[in-house]
Each structure stands twice: as structure tokens, then as C-alpha cells.
Length: 424
Image (cartoon, rainbow, N blue to C red; front, side, top):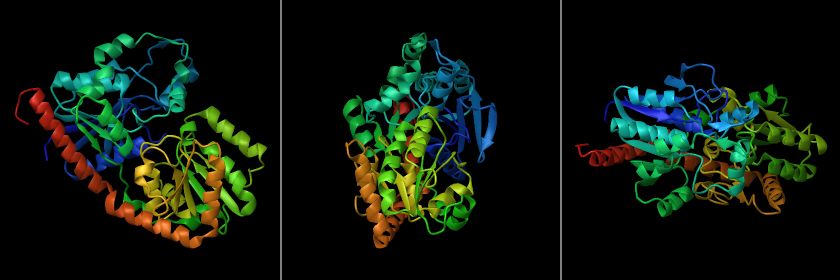
């Protein structure tokens, strides 16, 4: 393998606001470190208080940023820090240009930050790859609307920087584009003017998630040992669609009064989180539903939560991949998920999980019916959970995924070498 620093550039990276993208970047970096490579995370100060720190042994360097719009409130900036903000950081660009001994840049964002990576790579004559974690070709219009709410009616003075950085050319000029969802990869191949595109699914630390203490977790969170426990893990966010899950649970609960629902995740949309709490109160579900803030990625409690579950649910209205499904599978838990995006190629309906259609008018009823089916059929729960575990162990351990990523890096290096007319 080639020496030099692999520079990962996500939009934000903090331990207290953890999500799937952070998990992916950290696990990739860990595997690269184990292989003798030198990963480094360079990111913005979004949601962070420290300029430099080490997270699980991976160095993280952060730089000040701004959102180049007139009229943004403090709440608008906070919302953009949490999700989707199109930030600008010239100090981050300077850091990328000055970083010594770079092998390759790996961008984990588009827009101005992706353009920043593109500009640094071109200045340094180094390869860069882009991972589409949240999707771009396969995003519902409702999700795009949520992302742009903080800037509605605001004048954007930063467009000139986007043009100078080549923000609209990030994918066209990339030495390779990585799609974590198969459907996203298909649409990318139809949309981009090149074939430097790979479908590379996310992975899982199978050894870590295969064993946990479910009874201890239930005891710690006052969940009865005999309760039929549904667990959902993900950002408290309209994308994750926990409101439909609550509506389904309200329909399901009368047939299973001992059932409980546990929703775990950081609040990226506080107004949506309040909407969930209002629904819980209005429907007298407080005794049966618990919302926990996001558990740390390195917390044993996160693993224990999967092992405490009887069923894992993922009701997202948009999901490029769904790494939490792999984690639930490693704990041998049956999964009920939305028939959308990357989940459609990840889960085999009736074999490794069950589906419902989140965009249908009767989505909550569909989900409630699947929950009832699993509640009434322990053998089906065992069958789905065991099949999912076998799938995760056979195909999705991070060690396997990172070997494929290294091959992609080498393709990118070969393309960059031809671009700059030099030997790879």
C-alpha cells in the first residue's frame, strides 16, 4: 500500500452529535491505521469547542467556518451546523494546501466544502475521491426542502466562492465517486459524464456489536424484563420519520399492552423532536415510549441497546444505506424498515427483514401490521435475526469493506496520474 496521509474531510465531526457518516469515517480511519496507513480528519468547527483532538486514536483538526448568507439568526446557524449547512472555510482550504505528505484527499461532503477539497487537490496535484453518504441523486424533494429552510429568503453572498472553488464540478472532476447505496450508484452512472463510480456499502464492527448486555440496559432504563421492546436508533429528524413510527406504535399497542418503544438519537431538528413529544403526550403514550439522547459511538450502552431489543425499526423516508441495520443484524435482531433507497438492496424482504412503504397513505398501518406479525411469531423473529447476522458477518465487516476502498483509492491514484501526466 502507498504511504502518505489520507485526509478525510467531513462537514463536521464531533463525538456528542454522532451519526452514520461519523461512524463510517471513524471505522474507515481505524482500519486504515491498522493497515499501517496515516488517516487524518480535517473538518469545520461546527458543533465543536476544540480545535484539535483525538477521537479513538484518530487525529481531528478543525477550522473556523461561516455560512455566507445575509440575515441568518443564531438559530439558523445552529440548525445548519447540525444538518446540511453549505459552509465556507478559507482557513480549512489553507490547511489542506499546507498539509504535508498527502497521499489522497477523501471528501465526505459536496457544495462549497467539496469544492474546497477539489481546489486543494488540484493545487497539490493529488487525487481526490468523494463519498455520497447522504445521497444527491436519490433524495426526496421533502428532504431537500427541510435542508434549505434556514436559508429561505436569505441573500447568499458566497456564490462567488462556490464558483471559484468549483463547487458544481466536484463530482465531474473527482478521481472517483463512491456511493454507499446501490440505487444512488445507478443514478450517478446515468447522470455523471464519466464512469469513475463505485458502489461501496458501509460496514460494521461485527465483533463489537455481536455481544452485549440487554438485561442490564433494560434495568438501567426502567424497561420491564418481559416488555416487548421496539428500538429505533438514529437522529431525531424528519428524515428518520419517527413520527410515523409513533403513529404505528399507537396502533400496535392495544394488541400488545406490554410493548415499549425506545427512540435513541441526537436532536438535529429540535422542532421535530417537540412534535414527537407532543404526539406522545396527546396519545397517552408516555408510559410506553422513551426518547434518549444519542449514546456515544464508543459507549457500551449503544451495543447493549440493540441486545435489549426484540425488534429493531428504521422508518426513514430517505436512507442511502442504513448502517444501523447492520448493527442490529450483528445482534441477531429482526429488522422492520422502509422500502426506500439503499435499504431496498440491503434487506431481502421476508428473509433478512420486513418492509413497509413510508410514502403510502397507510404507512403507519403497514408498519403496525409488521410489528404485530413479529410480536405474534417468535420463530419468525429468530429466523430474520439469524439470517441478518449471517449476512452482516459474511459481507459487511469493516475489514472487507476497507480492502475494497483501498482498491478504489488505487484507481483514483491511477486516474490522477494520467491527469497530471506522471507515473502512478
